[in-house]
Image (tube, rainbow, N blue to C red; front, side, top):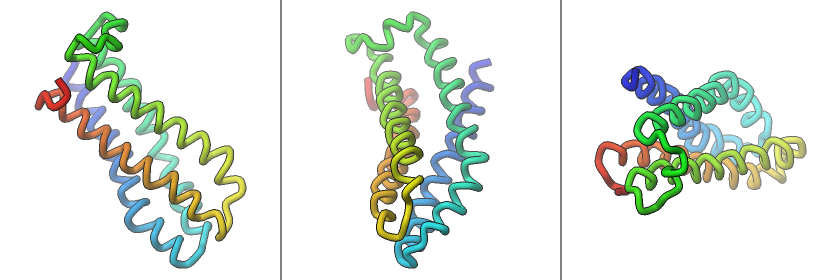
Length: 147
């Protein structure tokens, strides 16, 4: 069962992280250069159909795997427990992702214009970096980087 959870989690992470890397490195520079919010909105509309479900799948499978390796949820926050380090790191990264997403969705996107594109960039780039950090933290479960 753990293997299925891990595979599903990795496939969803591939979609989420890959989509954000494409957004940050290909779509965003083009939108900024052309001062075109439509370029971003078009990509976002398509990506959200697969990106948001992939994030939800990562959350569900991540929580399930964390529970399997550390069934006592209180231990997820006990820094003297080495397993807590990557689990807590993932929770912190998720919190930042949600904060950026909510701010973008309710404060930035409704007012997106050529002049506010840089504000959106300040949301896209950190979420992309966070998504790569999610992957690095996931790898640390096997490598021990955070233990």
